[in-house]
Amino acid sequence: MSASLKRTSLFLGLTALVALALSACQSAAPAADDLLGQIKARGTIRISTDPNYAPQSELITDAQRAANTKCGADELTANQLQGFDIDTAVEVAKRLGVEPCFVTPGWDLITAGNWSGNWDISVGSMTITKPRQEVLWFSPGYYFTPAQLAAAANSDIAKVDDIAGKPVCVGTATTYESYLKGEDVGIPDSDIKAKPPANVEVVSLSTDAECAQAIQAGRTDFQAFLTSGTVVDQAIAQGIPVAKVGSPVFVENLAVAIDRKSPKDPKSLLDAVSKAVTDMHADGTLKTSSQKWFGADLTTAP
Image (cartoon, rainbow, N blue to C red):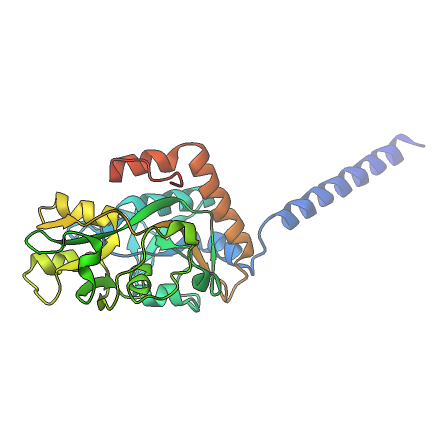
């Protein structure tokens, strides 16, 4: 074979190898028409959260919107919110290589699924339950919290059974609401530590953090509320005159949620988010954040 033919054969062989490598890279990358591919092409991930759920998430009222952001005008940037859920969401977005942008729809809309592509994931302390798993995909749990009854400090409610037949405040569409109504909460039986008292009159507000705030404001149609123990601790730290009542009644496994009926295929996004959460457990990111916001490690199942 002549030198020129050898060079031609070598060139063609290298060209074929490059084409094969490019083809392999393209097949490994998320498809442009799935949800993860859409997010990466956009450069942002839209995350739903609660602006009134400290210390997990709360709006920083005097924060200025970040400059040079890719977030839309109807979205909040990471510097406008703070809390454990916010730090978790920001870190997940970082590991996906995109900017986090936040929206704050009602909790009942988030848990119902069928988001119509209005946001991509929920990082809002959502408990994994059987009914929710019918409409949402879940990552591994990123932390665990106790469901804690609390009451106004001057009330006569000293133990959980004392709320029988009395009004108790909860957030709408929460596990706390289902529990007090005597419905199936949808969590493992082993995670339920006490049966709900009978004939509780459930008073539902848009978010359970509002229950303590309502007591502080002088509302008197209820004196007790059920929420995450972290929210009760926050209320007490803020000087709201409430106290814990008894031991936690159940334990919650909280995870990132994704709409099963997303207009774009969410499977690769679920895999990527699940890996991010698993890695954040392994490298201590979640533990460090939990100790920062809660003063304790809530990232290990009790």
